[in-house]
Image (cartoon, rainbow, N blue to C red; front, side, top):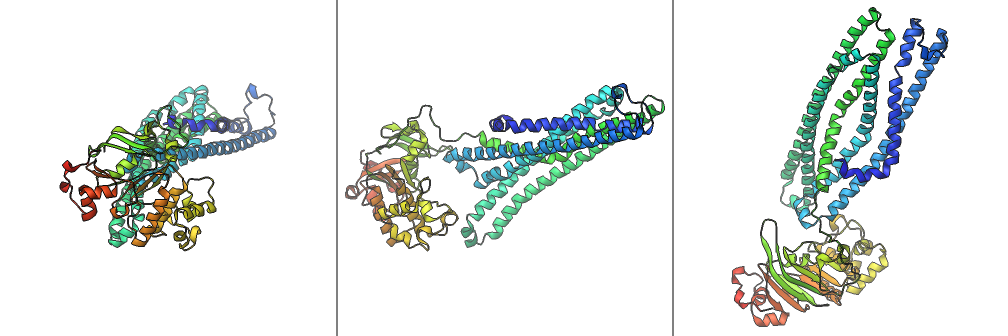
Length: 595
């Protein structure tokens, strides 16, 4: 597990070193702490002579008491300072490490390809970024400092006990193997339970995210109770697993107390007999009992922290699972850098199939010269959007290649490639910001005046000015504060702000009324000037301004030509534009125009 997070530990090595040194000092203070009490019992109360190695201390009872009390006070102060320094350093380092882990996880998720995001639920990913990382943070900040300090204390006390009275030490630690086996069993059990609990929490988060982002549909269908039950079932599973973890922990803690009590009683019985027979002083037994208590403290702490550690371990497994997923678009070694493309596009014998084997594209070959405006049309599922999404490498061909200026896009630097492309998706996603900030999204030099200039250039300035607060209109989450047409206008203007040589438009006029569609089409004509433009559309009436139209069916290009040429041919495109709805079996593949 640590190998995934080791790079994040290097920047905080200094803090960890100071924290470790403070923990060692804390352990040493706890080793020393019982000894002043021994000499108070033996030399101050029972008037036994001090051992030779303490001959420098005063012999007078009152003076010796004050010296020993001073030592106890100094040890307590140093112990408190060490605990404070250890906790602060380790907690600070832990916070920084967790910050880095959360950033690493977020960037890794960002880098994953389309197939990853199609398989994963957004709510579950949010749970991993939030709750799972938080569980790791809780363990790092609270559990780790305590465990490090207690383990050091345990090891030191065991060694001292063996040196001072090895027979009593063996008696004291006789039951420790039982605790070790029980600890391993319960921690493994709690970890498994917490893994299921974290998974259930992820499912609950996914249900909540899906419901809240689809609230209009939920309310329209009166499905509030259905979604509430789904959420309650998911959270109920998490609560049940949490209850099981508490039960397991509650079984472990009494076991620790029982073993500790039995060992203490055994040592006390034999110790009193040893005192009566003169083999042991009362102070020696007091020190030994203090060490015995200190020895069991880490184990007791472990029993209390078992839930925190189990939850953190399960959460770390979920984070590592994502970090071990490599579904991102591959960047080839020695990728070709590109500053500004000319804009020639080509599909060379491109095929594509999803993992389930369903073929979407089948040997598509198509050339799009610089500045050409090409429309991809066809029935739903014919492969139009798939072909387009291969240009920015949202999807990768199963075979064949997509070329930009004669170079396979897979061999181009990915960031450089995507800087050559302006993209308007079918569902324009806007961010919670002002209109002008959305228009200049991704640009470090964002300036309201630049946004206005872009809108004027494409003829959408008056449309945006009609918004409630014009360019300063605050767009709600996912752009829901605007109508569909308004969102589309902002998305088109945003694409134009990139001034890219390649323009990709996926159903840019879908759902628009006639008046707004006319304005958007005019804006698209202006925007497409000088750019190589690919447009996917079912609105065939709005494609008269494009240079070429490719008709797709079952992943193959059946026809290619201008609107006038295809209308004159009276084949597939003519049927599509005339009937608006046509079955695939109406297509006569023998009528295909050779490309």
